[in-house]
Amino acid sequence: MAEASGLLSEHLFFQTKARLAVVIAVLSSHMVLPAAQAEAVDEYTIKSVLTLNLIRFTDWPAEVFKGNDGTVNLCVLGDDAVQQAFTLIDKKRVGDRTLSAHNINTGGSQLGQCQVLYVSMETNNITQWLQESHKRPILTIGETDGFLGQGGMVYLKMADAKIHLHINLKATKAAGIWISARVLKLATIFNP
Image 1 (tube, rainbow, N blue to C red):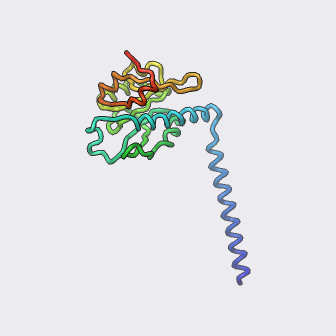
Image 2: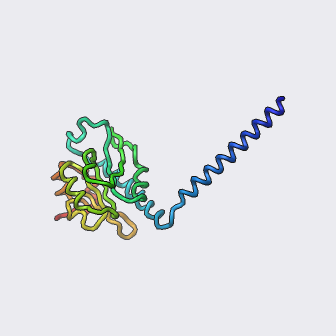
Image 3: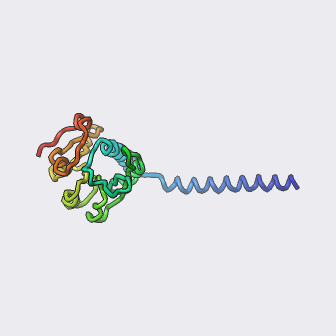
C-alpha cells in the first residue's frame, strides 16, 4: 500500500510539473516583444525611473494632499510600451507617500486626482491635456520638442543615447510646485 501511495504521489508531482511547464511556455510566448517595442520599453523604463526620482525631489502646495489617502497619483498618457514601463514604479515609496500610476488615455477630466502627468511622444491633443492640467498644481512631464513652450514643466529630451532634463521654472512656479535645487543643477532651464 505504501508503494502504491508513493507511486501516486510521484505521478501527481510529475503531472503538476508538466502543467507548470505548459503554463510557463504559454505565458512566455505572449510576452515576446518585437525588437522595436522592446527597445521602447527599455527607453521608457529609464524614463519611468527618472520620473520617480524627479517626483521624490518635488514639493507641492500642502492643500494638494489634504484628504488624500497617502498617495502621489501619477497619470500616464501613452501606448502599451509606455504603460508597461510605468507599472514598474507603481507602489514605490515617495517620502511618506506611495506612488500610484494610472493609465488615463481617454480624457482630461480624469486629471482631478493627479499630482503628476506624464505625456508620452505618442499622445494626441497635448495642448488640450496641458490646458486642463494648468487648472491644478500638477507636475507635467513630457518628451516632445514643443512641450515646454506649450506650458509643460519638465521635458525629457533624448539625444546622443542620453536623456537630458529641461525645466520650465516659470510654469512650475505658477503652479506652486517646487523642484529641488539638486535637480535644477542637473537640468537646462527653459526661458520662454
